[in-house]
Image (tube, rainbow, N blue to C red):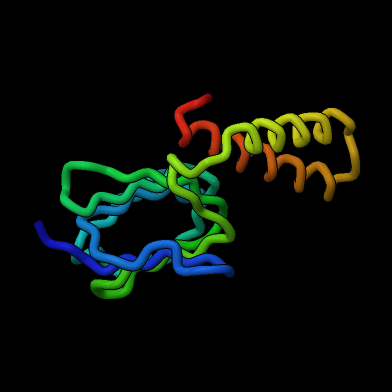
Length: 134
């Protein structure tokens, strides 16, 4: 199977730097699958599972928050504020984040606070989904 170079970076670190056969990411318009030779592409990604296949059959799954995916030649770059492998997710912490965000949403705060709480809830639910505990 043909591979491409994949880099996933956050403000703190390079999360992944290797070869991949396929990347599946969720954009605002829906899921996109990227293979070697994909046309040049840039899109916003939303909090969702990010699927990476290094061999074409098995997938490693990570919880990704908002960011962008960029395809340029045989280099695919994902820039995101946060990402973690499914097996590394602290489930208790994600549950607490979910509960806090739900309380903040119920409090009917300002529009800005509501949007922030909504984003935190989406991230927490994504982490729980990716961990297999939701």
